[in-house]
Amino acid sequence: MSTEAVKVGLLGVGTVGGGVLKTIRLQQQKLSERLGRPVEIVKALVRDPGKKRTVELDHDLITTRFEEVLKSDVDIVVEVMGGVEPAYEYVRALIEKGCHIVTANKELLARHGTELIQLANRHQVQLAYEASVAGGIPILGVLRQFLRTNDISSVSGILNGTTNFILTQMEQAKLPYHEALKQAQELGYAEADPSSDVEGWDALYKSYILAQLVFGEALPLNQARRRGIDSLHLGQLTLAHELGYRIKLLAQATKAEGGVQLSVSPTLLPLDHPLAQVQGADNAVQVSGNIVGDLLFMGKGAGELPTASAVVEDLAYLLTQRFSPHPLWRERQGNHGVGKEGTWSFVYLESTGLQGTPEQILHFLNLGGVSIAKQRIQYDWANVLRIGVIARGFTDEHRAALQRDFGIQTDVFPVISRGEEQDILGAKGREVDGKEIHFGY
Image 1 (tube, rainbow, N blue to C red):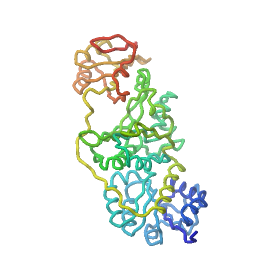
Image 2 (image 1 turned 90 degrees about the vertical axis):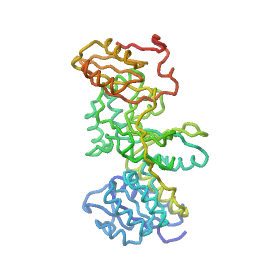
Image 3 (image 1 turned 180 degrees about the vertical axis):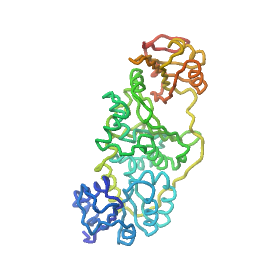
């Protein structure tokens, strides 16, 4: 075994950076045996050198100046500082110097990955990013293996543990959104500014990375469909559950005739769907391949040690592999924001000043060409009427007419079925014009 250490620089010693330090120290013997060399942290860039941290670090290794990291004799730099700036500037400079990079920064990759990969190839350095998607689930490595034999048609899943925890608490504990968010913040699942999580950005960044890996291209971020959970409330979750579904923030990357589609949206999943069973802060990724079929991967999607585990695995992998150019990423323009004609949706209607009966509203929808498979109607103590229907053919014209003629506010969510219309219609109910309709007064 060589006595010369692998010299590692660290950009950021927050939650994940501290976890990386702990993991390297805990697994030092195993890493040394696997790599044939010990691993040594030689520089750590921090914003506040006096901040109390969960892991001890020698004072002479800490710096607040990136130039000291750049000038140090490092072999690999681990970037876990987050955000686009100054991380982008730092990573560029390190690649140009010839340093291998391991990063957990999904926003950086989603916004600048195409450029950084080209730059890394030009300078013949590795850019590894397993920890950027789904934390401790080694999904990127698994997908690389599948791509050797499978044509993958879609990668979808629950890619944000914060929002999944919030939705779980809303459903199970009947907490309003803001109370569930506060609980997530108190437990450390959500940041003080949770906007990236609850507005769907975090999951979109991860979907973008998955699409680039699997399909070699993705839509620009501004063309992907993105909706978070910050406007959801208990009434919607309750009616969805009564209809046999659970709302999850579902991220999807699919290959269709029109190109790659990216979307992040609260979506109704049948209660027995594998992704509907994922609770708390866990993540899950479902992969569909032409040979392997559907596979589901579950695990901790965030946190100190799961993400650190992925970072250190990337670090070890780079040191045991010879350089080979990374497949280039591409962005392809397109307009893929419209769902397929005839797909089912969950239409949620709510009114406090009803100008008609529930029967009149449903009759209006029927006359307007909206096919309704299931429905539930609910009045609460404040005389708020809520109607939830599984329907297709609902349009913006229907939405405007309901507001104008009945004083009803509407919201529409996608529905994932099991592929057969009968699965949505169910086995009960009465048939009207060839369709089964359920009544839940």
